[in-house]
Length: 280
Image 1 (spheres, rainbow, N blue to C red):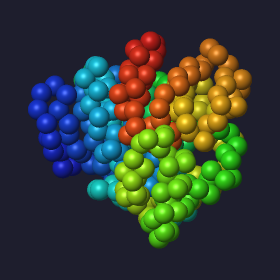
Image 2 (image 1 turned 90 degrees about the vertical axis):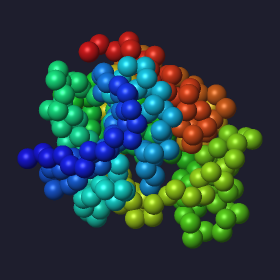
Image 3 (image 1 turned 120 degrees about the vertical axis):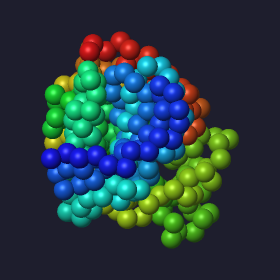
């Protein structure tokens, strides 16, 4: 049975930001929430938490949405198995949160838009596949092309590993994560080793065919101009695969893989504009 505990207000007014722990299915998921209206879930990238998405969440909430940010297992007060898991396990965490939210609101907020940054987009897609009744739409933020460049993945592994020399890490961060002229040192910190390892295991243990489609939900594909995970040659990859009727593509200028901290306003506004056009 789902239970909630430790509700804490962190702001005031209709869009107040709260923290709550939702329990069920052998896990406890801390959820940062704000705003009122249709549900939007923001899912962070590999080994990072969702607090750096504060500006995006606040802007979306102010536009008339209820924004949920489930913290990954191992972060904050979120707890659950970290070994021998798949993306399907992490999808169940999202379903737990959405169902709890709907049980607690009158009238129910309904299905959620699942917006995942980088690794988060794998979880968003898996949730939409496993729980189509809970997915109103999917937002891919800096998602990789279907077959990522091995050199980019290697650079990412070095950049996000705090045991590597700082100079090597910065080289990878500057190439993969940040557009020219942006301060890549911002992400020398913030990677949680245990969470990052667990999420990598979950991703690698899940066949791509089990989550790649994202079910049948509409998709907004937010691509960053300088993201090597999404080179210009792959810009229309998903449109070709899933069709123009399902896909909406927006190019975020002057950003790379860390687009959520480089261009938070552009990311939030693209999500808001697209979400307002979706059928309820």
